[in-house]
Length: 100
Image (cartoon, rainbow, N blue to C red):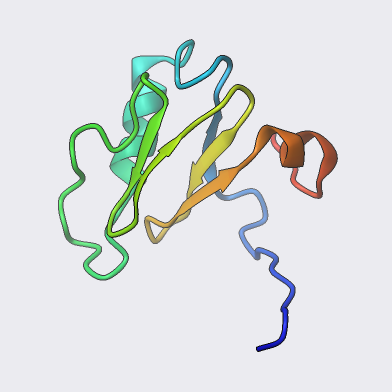
């Protein structure tokens, strides 16, 4: 298998929030709910969103894959299909990502 280049044609159409402290502390309830409601099961997008898919505890649940613990500065986004994108603080600061 050869490596490939990954990009996005989203052109800043991803819905995202940035964690201000370890976990989701500091995020408004409405922002938490927006991201949580955008997370879908990739094999069944009609599957209902699970309560706690994204929480102020800094836990992000990705259906069929499990939980991730967020750190300060991490960015969580969803696309129009309900896919979750997690970009680390380091990559947001030093990488090719743009957060507006």
